[in-house]
Each structure stands twice: as structure tokens, then as C-alpha cells.
Image (cartoon, helix red, strand yellow):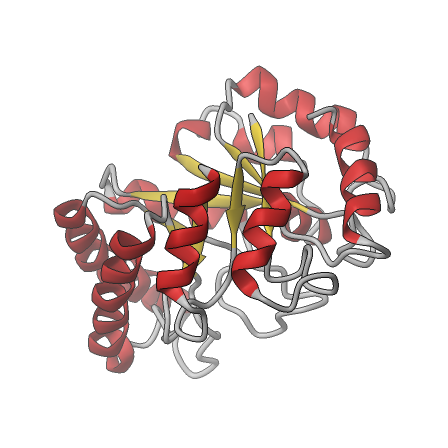
Length: 255
């Protein structure tokens, strides 16, 4: 396992220039970074900073964000995937993140689930052609994302399994999962081969690991037992200077 700084938030206070945050991550001894939306980023400068430092870009988000559970938005979603795959090729991003969109109260949950799987099958085919994986992220509905359709790791894994593509995996965000009251060992048991990326932040507050109540020794131990060797995205809002919070996170995670 290795750490990937979410430079949407980490190093932002110290470095307004986005490429400078990549250099800051390198100086801090990190092997990878990630960020959210890409259309507002200077992608040529980002790629240059990545090449200069040797830092990997673990993930960024498919945009514009469109609903998987609403068939009326599927064409726009697929256009966003195509554009984002080109941006991933430009930057060397290792994965693209997608979320479900908001629940449609007038439509049955099963129908929405099926619509999402249908959209993801078409998107995964595009990802296979490009050779870049998509990762589907369940988001918590208790704090940041009320109304989001997919807030369950188990259902997210079901969707990935139903799509059946090597280029669609689950993004397991331990913060969202913990907020939803899930037990990582239980929800991931026997299905971890369907996970492609992991992110962390502490609870409550979504600050650096070590600032809240999560037993990170236990959580990281679960990932080790499951054989995870990929990036652990530090997708937290730093509560203090970035380097200080990074030291706290490293100590808590043991990484």
C-alpha cells in the first residue's frame, strides 16, 4: 500500500498553484496524488509536474457528473466518460471515479439499480477500449450527500459484479462506509477482488486519520489481510497545516 494525497484539499492552503501541490507531495515523500474534477485544472501543467516529480495520478472524477439511475441522462453520462478518458490519457490518471446520482423517489429502487448497471456496462466498454479503469464510489447519505442513490458498499459491489468488466471496480471509501455504520471486514469479505481503489478520512469531521474515533490499526489491518497493495487516497480536509496533518495520518495509518 502507498499513500496518495488528495491535493484538492491537501497542500491547498500552502500552495494556491495546483501543480505546486504535486511538487509539495513529492517533497513530503508521497508517491501519488489524486483530485476531484479535472475541467478546472491546468492539465498540461499537471502532467508536466507529474513527469518532473515521478508522482502518479491515482484518480480523478468523471465530469460533468450525471445520473446513473436516470436513463434520460445516460447519453450525457457516456459523453462525460469519453471526455474524461481523454483527460486521463493526457494526465496519466490511473482511474476515473463515478458516483450514482440522486435517488428518484417516484421510481422503484430495483428499476434505478438496473438503470445504473445498464449505464455502467456501456461506460465500462468505453473504459476497456481506453485501457483505463472506472471506479464506482458509494457516498454517505447521513452527512455530506443526502439523497444519493448509492450509499451502500454491498450494493456497489453487486453493481460491479453484475457489470462483469475488468475495467469497473469499486472505490471503497472508508470514511463514507464508516459514516453509514458499515463494518469493513463484513462488507468486503469474499468480495475484495471487486475493489480497485481505497480512500480514507477520520470520523467525525472528515479530517486526517488520527483526528477522530476510527481504529486505523484495525482498518488498515483488514486491508492487509485482504491483500490490498494499491493506493490509499488521503481524501481528508486537513485540520491544520498540511504537513502536520500528514504526519498525524501516517502515524495513525502506519503507512
